[in-house]
Figure 1 (cartoon, chains in turn yellow, green):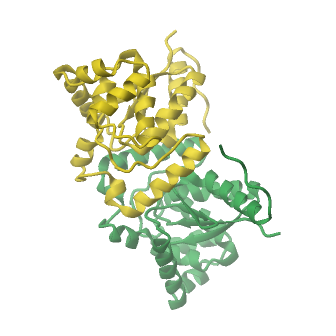
Figure 2 (figure 1 turned 45 degrees about the vertical axis):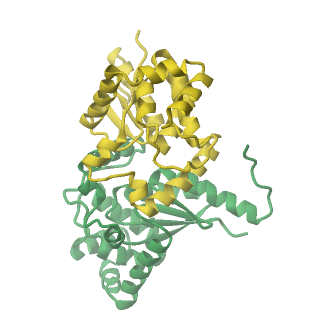
Figure 3 (figure 1 turned 60 degrees about the vertical axis):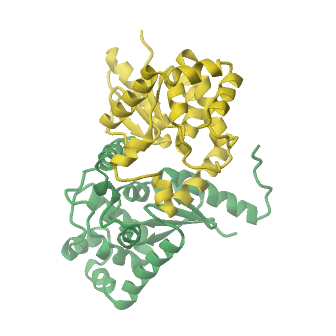
Length: 210
Length: 210
């Protein structure tokens, strides 16, 4: 019997993706849902909407609310938080690393997000990234080299194109059985959807909704 | 001992404000929090950000997600939902009515939101609005007339100016003890904040957060 699957779409530059990345492992584990990590780049997607940076920078009131919201949410979820001195950080290399992390993806994703949003480290710097990867238990030099091969670059481009095709316009996002959920606030709903979809497929009657 | 107070900022044209309006009464009641209804207009606030309509219309992917999200959330919260044939509806007259509704504000707010988002009625039409108000138990003719007096018009303008001053950039919003919460997803957190603030003032020790 296959475990329900949830695709987790994220960008390492995205503040709310940090929250989702730190929360998803435990929630999915408890729910018996398998998470597929889908790193992508928001940059090209923002560009297609006419934005040359994060909407949180373009719209100051929206940005101020986001920074305060993150403080409150991290306190609520007992997560470390330090506002990064650079926002958004260039997440290209980190995303490529995630594309070739293999079975280390879950640990590595948390480590890179933590470096950006709890330790205020420059995840765009290959030396910093190697150190983060080493500390997380993987091989920093090998992964950062692998990340710069044509195959891995193509994989990240394909991910970003697929995100755009799915209708993704921000991050994080979750996709369960073809259903797209936007925003870390929908993490629990998306996990429930994945569980329910799997039950449907196994022939259980659908839950009744008045 | 005063009840904790939560300001609820909303626009009758706003889809997520509908959800908040239908949910806030029960939640606040259970929490012993008093809700102050603060109708305002998003239009001038969007204009100041360079938008001539809702961002859900300006950014199609964002809009598509919102409509689907609303369907799912209304099902989850057992709320009626019909996508309005006009979006955003002109909410000027309805907001003015809310500004002079007095003690009928809670009932009236639900009735007007329900007309827009469950019954797809044109809340911009004075005749329709009168009928909605009458059905809710208040005096439609009197309120719609009162809504068009200079005093009430000035009150709505003042509300919108205050919203802008508070850093509001979308709707709904909640303000508890000077703390701004944006989005219907933060309703529960805002209510908890209001309760906690009131406890602080009464000399209870603050809850410990690691």
